[in-house]
Length: 425
Image (tube, rainbow, N blue to C red):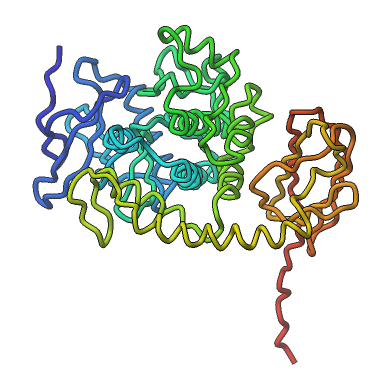
């Protein structure tokens, strides 16, 4: 059995941070610069094999394309003898697993914080999808936070090009937690962006409900439930509309899910108050968990004193009740479109990219993003979407009482191209 390497290139290796299948992540310190980093190399118990080293180098090259601030950056590839290592940026903040553990005694994340985290997570994953790749290892242990409340992704040596054929028998995906794996990945089908969408939805469902949606007795039972069982409904305190959004993202056939993480981010963002910053909500959760954020140093885990907020909220609520009483006497609450008194409503979820005005059966309803499904009478309906720079889009749908139909349209917006100016006389 090979002992742990003491150094790799200019990096002195400390204790292992975590094991990821064939690889081990070590704390590393650059001997000249003093820079701390994570160094990933082949597990010392394994003989160094050319194909494993090649896979390590290929995936490091793929991750280096992602760039930006959404992923832990690749610093360099280092070698000592026949051993190769990839040097990653060391996270500056806690991971999601750390945060949920810290918040355990205070009730976990607030409902709107779950949605805000989902928006930031999806936006980070969308940068990977934009490069034609898939993360494949999303789990609470690989989602890190900065002090400004943004999300950075780790676990990146599991990433692969979308549609790639992975020889899992020879070189299995390292470190992927099976409990967040999509059904098609369990079946061994090629990875696709919808696989990450499913993983994100499992994480958010778990955060919103406090339990894994497909929990089973052991890995085999869990894998079977992921492939066959429907997720349970979210608790009543979850943000309105989140159940519908996650329900679509957790569909078993990938084609029924959001096309990529960016589309899921759009839906989740529509559930938040437009004046609310997702980063601010996440910063509040980090501070409540006892972690430092920019401009505010935590004094440890503590319950939030909300008495001043409750006083303000009480005053605002009183005004809102007074206004509602005046307005409600004149107009009353809106009724579902075409629904007779006492009948059970059906629902239509309208998604349009980049945006569109929505009319159902000739009646203008709202402009996307629309946070909640639109209640309608069961039966057939005509949905019209308008954008000032795109042709109108029409869809005929039929909905059943109690169920939600999804209309997802990419508006063919005209992109104006500036013609070159001929300066010749």
